[in-house]
Amino acid sequence: MARVVVDVMPKPEILDPQGQAVAGALPRLGFHGVRDVRQGKHFELDVDDSVDDDTLDKIAEGFLSNPVIEDFVVRRVDQ
Amino acid sequence: MRIGAVTFPGTLDDVDTVRAIERAGAEAVALWHGDADLRGVDAVVLPGGFSYGDYLRAGAIARFAPVMEPVIEAARKGMPVLGICNGFQILCEAGLLPGALVRNHKLRFVCRDQWLRVESTTTAWTTRYEPGAEILVPVKSGEGAYMADERELDALEGEGRVVFRYVEDNPNGSRRDIAGVSDGSGRIVGLMPHPEHATDPLTGPTDDGLGIFLSAMDNVKQGAA
Image 1 (cartoon, rainbow over the protein chains, first blue to last red):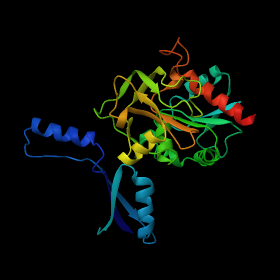
Image 2 (image 1 turned 90 degrees about the vertical axis):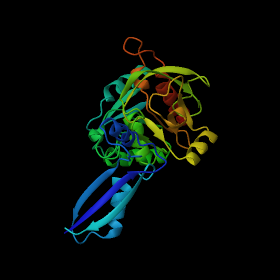
Image 3 (image 1 turned 180 degrees about the vertical axis):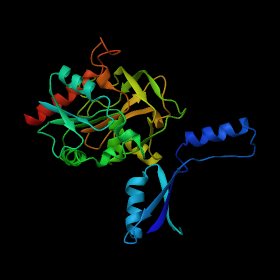
Image 4 (image 1 turned 135 degrees about the vertical axis):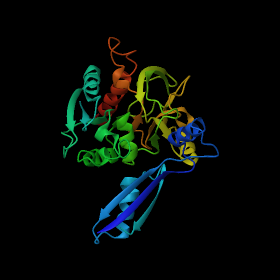
């Protein structure tokens, strides 16, 4: 078994209204100096050792993210 | 003339879609997400709603439902396919239409009657409209902002594939006020607003949406002739 993390983020040129809403709320809560917030998704997958990197890329690119609007990063992490 | 309406778990507007198809004078065929074939329909509509709870991304899971295999195959062979709202999102996720739909720019779910301009009257779903016609139909979505990169948007405009555009007030931050687009053949069309809710003045703002279904019937008849 291996732990795999997939992070999916909106592409830089895509409007991220959720991140903007968070950024807009911070000064109201008394937190200053945060210039920008972007909000994405974080997936944790427990996979069998038989699952190779190519398969993980296919899962991330073809399903967990939409390449039209999102970028993704796949990484294996120590448990 | 048989037009299918697909029900996924979480689809809401299949009943109104069936009613719109029948009101236009075609036979409506209920299709289920688990179906392996399209029961001999001449055209197919993916209605709105929240298939699979919109989990992951709107349309991302429905795109892999068993019924989508024959839908994609038929679409590639030229069958008219219409995606309304969540159906539009599914067609984009399936790669049958370009671009993607993301969260509305003000993060609010918008539900109201909306004026649209019919920008292309040569698609399989819009031949009944006069060029530049303005129609009033409901829009109701939280993830309706149409996004594509600038090159794709220029290509869509250049090829006349922007089919519907919001007029007066863009409800969701869609790039270039785009409400609906088509594929290169003009047989696959998707739009966020709901023509199926505007087919009877008794229950909708207008019957402006009826022309969508009548257009597809004309198209199928011409194909058979």
